[in-house]
Structures are given as structure tokens and as C-alpha cells.
Amino acid sequence: MQIQVKCSCGEGKCPEWAIIELQGVVEAQPSVENRIQNLEIGRLCHSSSQGNFTFTVGYHELSGTKIPLKKPLLVLKKKKVVEEDEPNPRVSSRAELEIIGIIRQRILFKTRPKALISRPQIKEKKAVGSNRTVD
Image (tube, rainbow, N blue to C red):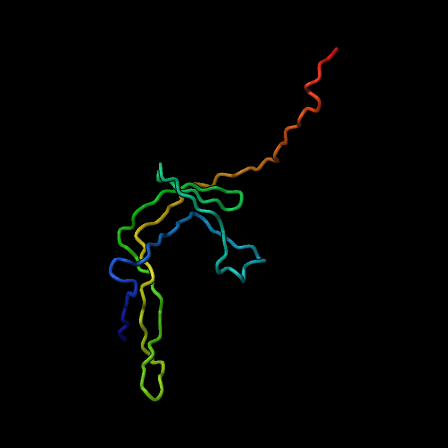
């Protein structure tokens, strides 16, 4: 069976994606296990001056770097082909793969996470009547 690969983005205009590589396992809590699509698991930040990345998940922070892949990867979406005959259009058994992105680099987090400890904020007490002079 022959599968055609098409790029609707145009020459050199495919969106750039990246792979995030972690050591260990990221597990969802049982309360959100069934709703994992579009689930926000953390915050990814980039330091442009040093080229480092930080990934914050809950009370844990990971540090990583960007590494180019030896061979780029394509992100594909499978589509059924609709053969259009004038009387009745029908879906055929042929499939096409549409390119929706290309991956040329990965962000590698290879060190153990640093624990972020939050402290309660201490409010400064203002002295009442501190302008008075003592006799």
C-alpha cells in the first residue's frame, strides 16, 4: 500500500517543534487521568543569555539545554482520502499523511529536580506614631 505525504505549509514554512526529554516519569493525578489532553503540567522558560531552559512542575524545578537532533523528525497527521464522484462522494481506503511540523532539536533535562521551598510572606509591621518625641 502506498501512502502519500503532503505538506500544506509550503516550502520551508513548517512549524518548528521540539522534544522535551525528561529522566523519570511524569504521572497525572487520578482526578485528571481521563482529561489528560491539553493538561498543563508545568511552565517552560528560556534564558536567552545563557541558552538554558528551566521547567517548573509543581514544587520542582529542572534545568536543561537544547541539543540538535542528528536526523530531523516529521510530525504527521493521517487523513482519509475522499474520492469525489459527481453523484456520490465516498471515502476510499487510501490514506494520506499531512506534515504538520518538523522536529530538529530536543530540550534535555538530565539532572535531578531542585526542590522549590515556599516560605510564607512576612509582612512588615509599620510603627504607629513613630514621629513622636519622648519627653
